[in-house]
Length: 237
Image (cartoon, rainbow, N blue to C red; front, side, top):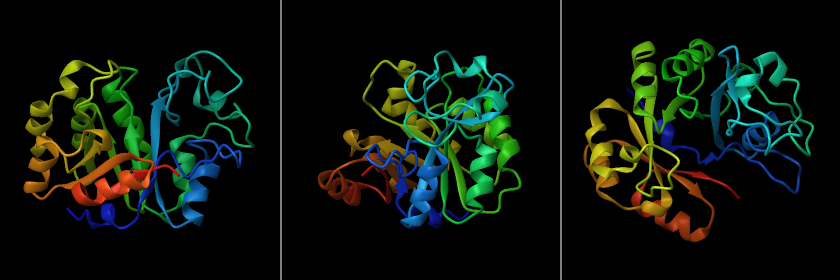
C-alpha cells in the first residue's frame, strides 16, 4: 500500500487556524487556509446524535461555540447551524469538508473514541470517505476503532496515534509502549507525541519500515527533533 504521500506535505493540526485572523480550529476556513499555504491538514471527528461524522475535537460545545452541552444531544443538521466562536464558520460535517477540499491536499482524519461508539464512528467515517478520490488516511488513539475501520476499508491507510505520557484522558493501556509495539502489524503508520520522542515504539515501527508522524510541533526545537526521529509533522504555527 502506497504511503509516500504521508511524507510529502506537513499537516496543519486541526487545519491552519489563527485566533488573530478569527480562523477557528477544525473549520472550513482553517482547512482552506492550509490548502492556500500548501499544507495538508489533520482534523478530528466525533458522532452527532444521529451518528453522522462531525468535524470537532471536543465532546461538548462549550469551548468553541456560544452553546453548551454535548455533541450527542444534537443531530448533524442542528450542529451545522451552530456558529464557531469569533468566526464566520459553523461546525462542519466530514462530508462537507471532503466535498470542499476535493482532493487538493492530503488529509489525516483522527477518529475520536471518547464517545465509546467504536463501530458506529468507524462506519460513519467510512460512509463519508468511501467515494473520496484524494489522498486521505484515518488514525486514532483507539486500536478498536482502527480494527473496525480496516474491516470496512482494507485499502485505506490506518494509523495509531500514541503517546507514553499518561495524562489520564485514556485507558492506561493505551500509554503502554509495549502495547503500542504489539499493534505494529495492525496499522500502517504511527503518529507519536513529539514530547515522548524517541522511544522503543517509534524505533521499532521505523525498523519495520512504517512511516512515523509526530504531533504537535509548535517550535523550531520541535522541528529539529521531528526531523531526526520522524518522517513528517503535524504542526501549529
